[in-house]
Amino acid sequence: MAIYLDHAATTPLTPAALAAYVEALGVVGNPSSIHTQGQQAKRMLEEARETVAGSLGAEAVEVVFTSGGTESVNLGVKGLFWARGGSAVRPRILVPGGEHHSTNDAVEWLVQYEGAVVEWLPVDALGRLAPSVLSDRLAAGADDVALVSFLWANNEVGTLQPVASLAEVAARYGVPVHVDAVSAYGYVPIDFGALGVAALSVSAHKIGGPVGVGALLLSRRAEVVPLIHGGGQQRGRSGTQDAAGAAAFAAAARAAVEEFPAFADSVGALRDRLVTGIRSAVPTAVLRGDPSAEGRLPGNAHFTFPGCEGDSLLFLLDMAGFSVSTGSACQAGVPEVSHVLTAMGVPESEARGALRITLGHGTTAAEVDALVAALPAAVARASKAGFADRRVA
Image (cartoon, rainbow, N blue to C red; front, side, top):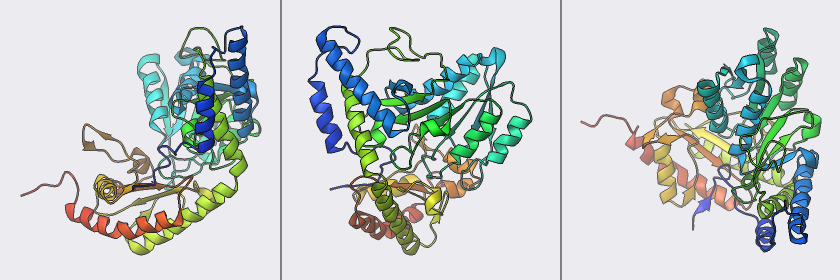
């Protein structure tokens, strides 16, 4: 039986979420219909909206249900850009290096088709954007800046951003902020109301809910231009709402609140056990991201292994019964170096040996120890294989 250690990609559906999902699927009615059955579905939907809002320190009216994190990010970034006047008024978007592809690709689309101008802000060797960097950039001119968008927690290396400080800097210059909190949700406390940003993206399947449902938190003071037009069922989003998905999302959100901080503490302890074990078993391994417990996601351990191809390690560990990730993209069978690591200044030769191990609900100490025991053999074989583009005589 495989040991699942890729919770950053998706975490298993919790029993509570599954039960809520199955029960809700039996409820007939469109939430927008005014008859009794439609209103029953609407009641279930709105109760779910209130629960999700409560788990994030938001008001129910600020929750816009979406199809997942990617749509939430696209609606937040593109919607704010258009609402701020687009390229005709404020063409600039400020984004740190090493963001998730949903942000990067959305921004690049705006550059290509909407005349946006993106400025990539430098991050440090831990993958963190310093508030002083953002402050210096905005002090040089903020009138033409549409928005700032950044991750709460880096999805690859797990580094936490100084979100409150960054938000305060942007507010000082009157620039709205979108935060991608998809990786952070359920692992760190989030208080949307206290943060004061314009928009924040989350996804259900990262906290034990189903794939295919997420949310964009949109402040009462903020507006977005919709991506999808139709019936105007929600602020900034049209389309028949997935009441069953929302109910399952709410069940997972409720559990996330009830189990936190015990969950974060237990997963953090396992993460520390894993990091210590890997450093002992493979002394050449290099931990990437913030090394401090308080500076990174509790379930994230990201290493690079000199002389190894990350994909080789992944396949070898998969054959040994472990599900992990390289944290890098692979297109058309050609390995690509992680843009996150290169943004952090990691040389390409080192970045190619990346391996991301992420823990979550159900992870045990025995599973962590089993991976640590299997890793030296996998590293030895991957080192012997070398890089994928090496020349063979």
